Length: 551
Ligand code: ATP
Ligand code: MG
Ligand code: MG
Image 1: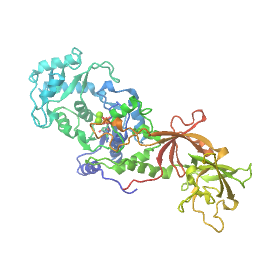
Image 2 (image 1 turned 135 degrees about the vertical axis):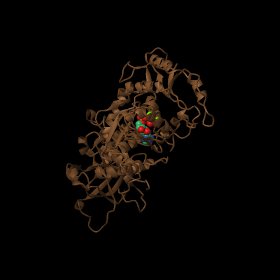
Image 3 (image 1 turned 45 degrees about the horizontal axis):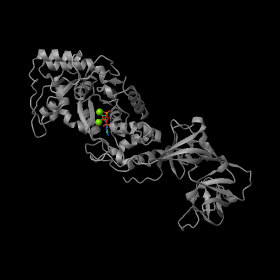
Image 4 (image 1 turned 135 degrees about the horizontal axis):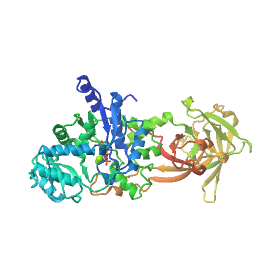
């Protein structure tokens, strides 16, 4: 597609380069390792790594690991795997904010020495009260005027572990009456006597996000620190630290609007709740909007990158229709998914005029428009299965499938005619007796037009597969929007249905994670973990064929 949505950050950097304000572009993707990455992070990854690629610069991967109690190695590993799977590679080694803890501590000491930070002993409630509100200025803490010596002593003792968690914090001394609340003496350090996955027991005080983030950017020589709009109000503070500390570089924070998708929750905290409370099988459940879940569902890296291009980068908030995601996915799969036939809801078809033990093998292309994808062999015999909904006894004129007394083409095979409908005692159709026209293989029948084509499998050759059918995880377009109603109230109880499909035998050799177009049904992905275990085939429905997204 030629349409590429606007990316205002890219345009901005182009101007900066043209004016010589910037020589080399260095960005970073800074996840907190407290959960798996989701589709919103994919947007941030595509943006940050994409800018580096576009401007021939570099992008770092930095774990923003300042809240050790919520973080883990499992998350660190999954994040690296997801970034690489999306097709990006970070510059040099993986970085951790915790690598800079010594330097950040020294910066804090610099601020204390300059009379710009102090140790405060207000408790959380008092802290809130002193902070003031949007309309009301804050009040100075009674600890604000401690001497430099006292502050240094207190801060060193905080570090030495002399005080209990939560009893003291280090705060910047800025302005308690600043209209921007972030500048009302923000917290730089908290006491938390918890071990850290990277630094072990070395620290019992940890820097705040605000104090750590910009300085880490500066230490890495980041030129453009791209983040979501919630941090716009933090930018004056970001700049205050950069201006008041002897940092080696002056990174620039630029905000863009976060990705919101309808029928989807994109908050790690909420996704974690879905996992912890068993609403899904794990972070990589194919219904999850996590990168690993989408991967397991059958999304491809190219489809996610294409989606992020379509969404664009702006500063206006909005909710993207999940249909756009499906559209980007289909655009890729239509071109790149091999075709196969599978019947999900079978009825038997017996070709009465076909020899009992005869089997034909058709060699057909795996993709109608791409020879490079190779060929597959499809057996044909007297006993077939077709989709129940492809037969109708009393069909309207426009029903171009099989009807009683009517003809239809079997995909890649003959034209057949339904001669008799066999029903059980309850009137349920159990079998169709048909005849075939031997003169219709690869050519049109003599003297008549057969419009419909249906898919089928040879019953004795069909391979059963577990087929997992997915719907949206939430029934409400905005599961997250109503503060009164918990998002869990909108869980779709029918988001997963498991059925048996009857596959053409070529699918026996399908590798896990291959996505097929099951002709006339939709796209299905061989499950990354369960497919092939004990010889069992397992397919996840990725997305249907019909694209209803309007540009
Ligand atoms: P969540 O809001 O889901 O808890 P987070 O913002 O706390 O996520 P981080 O690990 O801090 O998660 O995010 C890493 C980067 O990804 C940040 O720069 C953040 O701004 C960006 N990001 C997170 N969610 C989105 C989103 N929905 N759209 C775009 N970027 C996002
Ligand atoms: Mg965060
Ligand atoms: Mg967040």
